[in-house]
Image (tube, rainbow, N blue to C red; front, side):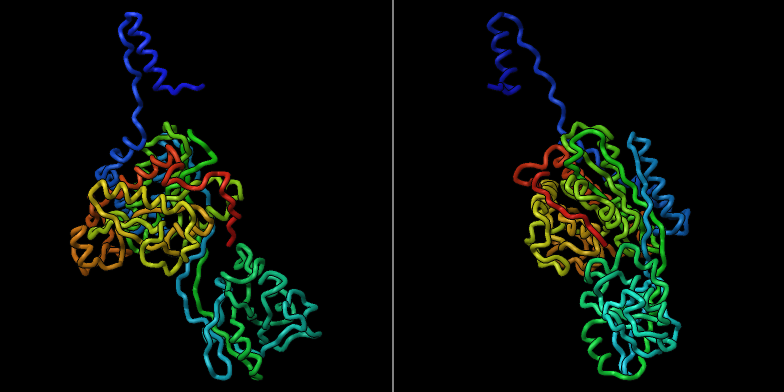
Length: 492
């Protein structure tokens, strides 16, 4: 029978006493990570990080947005701090799209305007649109030149195809060879819900003509019309290159990884000190205090996402690049976003689905184990004297990509544009009827408008959760084991 270490030590002490020898001094017990780490992630330490980010913004036109020198300097600052503390750091590059203007994409049929989805995000029509006859291939998929009738299509023709058989690029290319000026794809789901293989990764790079997606209902209207139609695609999108910053501990189980992340960028024209310099400061301080080789059972991965304000490019692209086995290695994801609001609330993301229903996530869409993550975070906040409230999971958060992948999620925030209620003001202090962060996404989101107390409380709460799961992902607040994770690769 295996004797526990503590019992063995007691027995050794008894035997030593019987022999007349002095009792052996007890072996020192190393402090637990959960006891040390939260106390080391202080508001003052994080505020020092925020001052560095403010300096970067001030030296670069008051912004740290993706595509600006301020973002590049932010990334370099974070990567250097990690390397200086012994971490191996990766800064993988990825391409993302930035929508400058949504425009008003439309199709005019018999004098009536109908909204469409602009699939050719990098290609627009002339300002007055394109007017042409509707032409349909004999084979509705329109995947090959031979799908169309013989001869060249009428000048300025607008081809109409269905969403089956091949990619939208192949459909466009066949239509262009026949002489079409633009193309409409009939699809019930639009670009995000259409059949697999229609909108392949990077498809927009292959579209050189105006292409829109229309609904089956609009297609029915088209079939009843005999005259030309006018297509206007005026949404403006540009292609940007960005980078993530990734580092992880070298000790612990590499097949049971705790990921904690924050987005690096600010909103355009904003220093972004609360949104989301505060999250960056917290994750960076946790990493520095843990160091690259903590006494922990599980690996901790620190992620700083290089694109969030205008799209979830950083977190999404990170997941797109992971195969099934690597996805299953991730135990959970903790998100830190906007935790120093000057009229703060104390919110945990609603992993146990006890709050108001989310507009973006059905109950069954919240990954198993997210309830335990919320309890860990809420438990710390309660002990810190800050009664937490639920924040609904949202597709506008980096959490969304991980939840979609089936990874348990959680995180904290002190709130943004939502108004603080009278009840919340009684509970947490501050001003009822005012936004939690009145400076959100503005030039006023600077070092002078951060609540350092809230910053310290929320940063320590995340540190406590990171430490707890680094030590164990089992127990009442645990997440599914590695053998229970059956995730499929995430695709655009």
